[in-house]
Image (cartoon, rainbow, N blue to C red):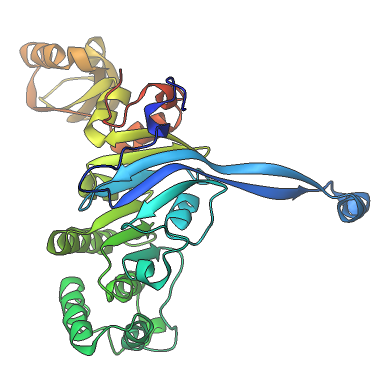
Length: 356
C-alpha cells in the first residue's frame, strides 16, 4: 500500500472510469548505469581492470494523466528528464520501473498497432531525405504505415492545405529553409493520422512567423481530429498560445501538474503596472509606488504585490499625470524560471494546480 503522505503528483491514477486517459504515466522511472573513471593513464587502466559505476536517475516516480483532446506543455530546464519521459511514453526506452498506457496500449509491447496511433516529432532530428523532395518521404511513410491510397491522398491534401506546402513538395529538402523543413517534418509525421502527438521542441530555431504557423497548425489539427498533444518547448510563446495546463519537471521529479493560470498566481506574487506617463514625470516620482523595473520616458514599469496592485494603480492615477495604465502578470518566462527553483512545489501542489 502506498504511503498516505505521497505527493499528489506521484500517486497512481484511477483509470476505472468509462473514458480512460489518452496518456497515462504511473510512477515512471529511468536510471542509467554510468561508468566512472579518473583522468589520465592510471584512470583508464583502472576503468578497464576494475570498472566502477554509478547510477544516474534521469526520471523518478513521474505520474500524470492526459485526457483525449488536451494540449499539455511539458516544461523543465535542459537535462530535467523531459525527452527521456517522451521516449519512454513512445516505447523508445524501457523504464527502470513504473508503467504507462498510451492510446490504450503498453508502449513497449504495442507493436505496429500502437505506432500507428502516435507520432513523435523531435525538433533537432529529421526524417526527411536530404537530397530528395518532401514528397518522396511522404510516399515512403505511406508504404511504412500501409496507408491506403485514398486515405493517403486525403490526409496529404489536408496537411498541404493547413501548412501551405504546395510550393515545397517538389524542392529538394536541402534547399528548404528551417521553417519550411519543420512544416514538412510535421506533415510527414502525421500522414498516418495519429491521435496522439509527442512534440519535442517543434519550433526550435524557427523565426517568429514560422513559429506562429506551427502553432496555428497544431490548433487546427487538434480541433479537426480531437488529437492529444504533449509538447516540450523552451519558447514560452508556444506554451501560452497552445496549452492551458503544464507539467513541470526538474532533476527527474515532477514538481507541478496543473493550470498555467494557477501556476502564475502561485509563483508570481507580484503584478506589474505598465504606465504611459504625462509630461515631466520623473523616475524619482514613481519610486514611492513600488519597485521601478523599467523607465524610459514616457513608458515605465512598476512592480508591486498582487494584493496592492489595484490600490497602487488608483493612487498613481490620482497623484501623477498618466496617459495610459495597465496591470499585468510578470513575463511567463520569469514565472517558469521561478518555478524551476521552488522545491516546495514537489510536496505542496495538487494535480488540479491548487495548493493545499
